Image (cartoon, rainbow, N blue to C red; front, side, top):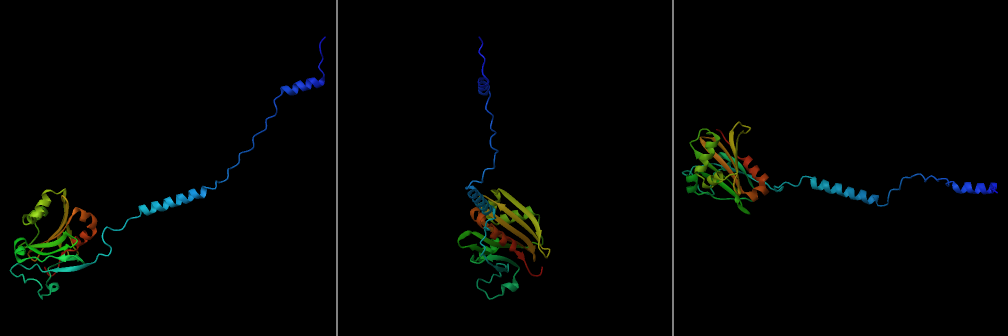
Length: 239
């Protein structure tokens, strides 16, 4: 005979078969800022500060305390060369001027040297004797020849200049005029282990050539000072 389940039995069976209700997960909440976040901010600030220091322009290669004095050159001929220590007023009779760094020494030019290659004045750095500036002049020039010709003529009486030009990596030249309209040829020679700046002009029926020479290591270190010397040369007086 069939067994009739009681209502309680049916309820029990039905309850067992159903899945329990799903409890929804708690809503996500924003996590609090971890306590080490300020350390990251501090590190970022330090990195920015370090980058600023590294990208800030460094100090000039030239000595900021470097001072100069003006040299007054008379371009006297060998025949009229009055020796050293004369009492003449060089400033009043000067035909050219250029700046000399304080502390540089003057090399006294002999009459023979003045008569053969026209060297009129020379100064050098006592700490680096091959770092120097000097001026030569030649009489009988009423005006400047073409730039290339002038440089080649200068090299004829200067063996070191010949060698520098022949082995140069580059030779640049240009024309410039000063505030008085005086024309100058400007040369820059980047040679093997040596750099040279030359400035040439004609006045008073003479050709003046101002040289600034330095070995490459000194050039790389003192370029700003050496260019200052180069730019400072000019002729003066009535022409």
